[in-house]
Length: 151
Image (cartoon, helix red, strand yellow):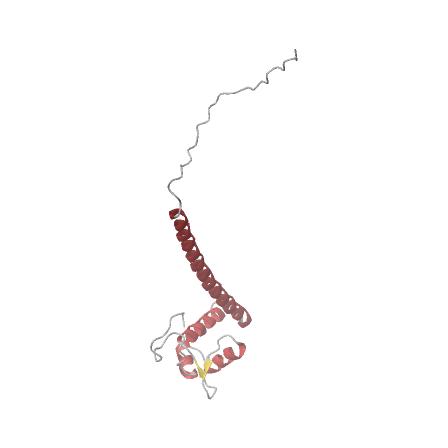
């Protein structure tokens, strides 16, 4: 899931494994044997039923299309595609973590501002505020008094 809680257990999402291999092959434009090969290589790993049958999600179908496009149109080998997919997953996880940390920082900043406001509200108002004295540009020279000799 994408972080949201589903209220209906029968609600379908992009992650719901609903397509058998023949339907997934047809939707992706690939041969079922190619899907099995991609599964063995770890490129696209569909969910499994209790009887070990593969069930593909809409996201898996999209990934199959991406693998096919990278392989056929871009000329990238399967090992390279696997690395690209791994890096894309890593980037997505890092972006999620950055968003999480950014939210935490925003929360901490708001708490700090609230605490700062509480501190300012607790100040006693009978104190005299400090006023900066204007500095004169006059120069004062100090000279010690001459010592008197004892009489």
